[in-house]
Length: 186
Length: 170
Image (cartoon, rainbow over all chains, first blue to last red; front, top):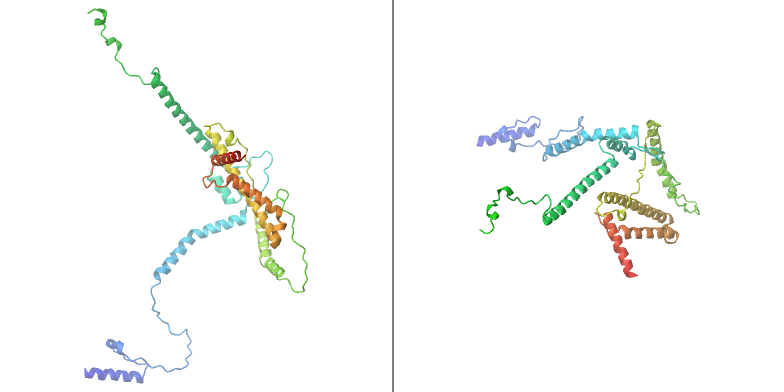
């Protein structure tokens, strides 16, 4: 114990003597002496000493932002490039009066070339959509009408009883035994 | 810049900007700022537009305004004729949109007039004010509280209520 403290004090003494050559005992790093640095104007030829700055992890945040930028730009840049090229090289349409006797196609009612392309390639003309809706309405009107008449006909046939519906099955008239009816005073 | 609308079809009101009556020797900061804006923003943008139009070439595609035929209205439809109802409904919706745009145009005129005249707009813009008043009142009467699910039928019922109220008042 005493020898240890002597050794320690000797190590401290030598450290103070020659700060560049410090023989640190690996077990007692916490109790080592710090080299006393005097205030001297030092000119570094480099950017100073490289520091290991201890801070909380920003790995997850940076990874998230990196992935966000990556996935947004993955389709963002091609779309932006496409739209720029369309606007620069093709250009928007100009408004004009409808020439005499000319029926414009349904995409020729839009200004921007991409809208025109979408309307031409994917969508039916609004006239066709209108007609489709009218066809549906016509079919549904027919169905409603038929259902109404069916209900009315049912009512009439049930009332009067002379129609083809609401027949009540009776026995075959050949099965009736007329023999007791042939002699009335039995 | 793309071509402006036809000035004969939608004529702008005559400009009422007063003549410049400079009474000081100091430079006009509004003029300086406007010249600055012109040289820093307007001119480069116009030049850029010119370049782009040079690239695009002369063959321009055209677009048109669609013209719709008039169809019989809801009052002229037979009862139970759902096809007629549908066409009348579509026509009413188009007319509703047109009326909304008309109100917007009148609003825009009033706004421009107020901006031009400054503090004395109440006298100088009397015509625009009266026009706006009339148009907005009639729009409110016809399409006022119909709501988001407005339909030609509801509008017709509103008109009926109006006529009944008028008949009662008389």
